[in-house]
Structures are given as C-alpha cells and as structure tokens.
Length: 263
Image (cartoon, rainbow, N blue to C red; front, side, top):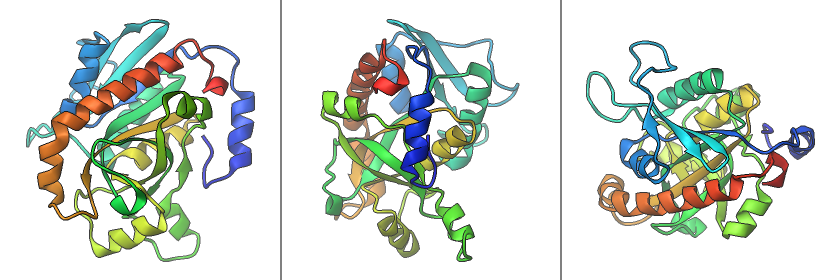
C-alpha cells in the first residue's frame, strides 16, 4: 500500500509482491450485524482460544474456504455499554493485533457507509475505495495538516474492479456518524464519495506494517439527502448488509488462487 498518493511506490510494491497465491485473509468488520452473514456464508467458527490479549472484547471467526484461510475480526461489544465497538480507535487496535497474530497476506475492511448523491452514490451501492483519508483530524500547521488527513491508497485491484464491475470512489473517515460543517468541508476536500468510521484507521495501520488492504463499503444512507442520517442508516442496514455480503463473497471468490499482483 502506498501512502500520500505516490503511485510509483505502489507500483514498486506490487512488482515486489511474492509471486505466490494469496493464502491468509483478515476481514475487519465493525458491526455484528455486518459480520454474521459472512460468518454464516463462509461457515466460520468463533475462536474460543483467542489470539488476542485477555479481557478485550474482540472476536475472531475463522475457517478455510477453497484455498483461503479466512479470519473475520469483529471488535465486539463495548464492555460497559454493550454496543458495537465502532470507530477509529477500535479499528486501529484490532487491525494491529490481527496483523501481529495472524500475518495476513491481505486485509479486507468491509462495512456500511454513508454516500453522497452529489458524487453519484445511491442506497445499496457497493464501492471499492480507491484511497482513504480522515476528515476530522484538523491540524492547521504546515505538514501536520497533511498528516492529519492521512491519505493512504488502497491496494491496486484493476482486474477485480473490471471482473466484478464494481463502483470505485474515495473514502473519508471520521469518528462521528453525523456531519458537522467542518467535517463537510474536509470531506469535500477529500473528494469523497463515501464516508465511514473505520477505513482510514485500518489503512493507516496496514500501511505502517506494509500489509496490502482493500476497502469494500456498502451505502446505507445518503449524507447529503433529506432523511436524517441515523434514521436512514437503521432503516436500510439489514438490506444493505445483504448487498455487502454478496459483494464480499464475490471478492473472496475472485481472490482465491490469485497473487496480489493479479488483483
């Protein structure tokens, strides 16, 4: 994964990628509702002898599908409030711990997201993110401002995009479900089609530890539409999760037997 939009670094990384088929995949998913259909689809089992530190709520489901070792990581429920551990902090921690414990060849961050009708998104669309950036880390000091945005490119997947006819757009990440005027300005500057609460954090850790990552995001709500975001998100979550499940399955089927450079 290249950082800060440097194509030459990305192309160099692909050319240096081992010419062996992808074997181990880690799928990072923030919400149980999003995770369970894939757990059932791939007949994964929960790891009761956890590879993670004692006491954390993180859950690993794992199994073998075709020629792939699949690990689906869900950050679990907050131990105090009992809700899904969404957001960038949990996403960063589980990504780091998963890479350390499982040594994946590829990370897939899958989940739901808000979309922008101004960029052509509609509810039910599934996007592959071309790159990820933050919209709520505003540091108005030269160079620190670029660090705050934290732009990272996803692993290049031209063949996957063509074969599955996937939509491609830029992803912007922040720790709030709603969108403040400051966030809106930053999201516009990021040229984002979709916004979520985890992607850029996963991208940061994956880039730090030099593990290729791709981002599959299904649109539950239209951020620049007329409906309240929370209401529209909850209304569409189940149906859009089914679309996400189908697309991730197609992505996994495509990846099976291929090298990173063939994606």
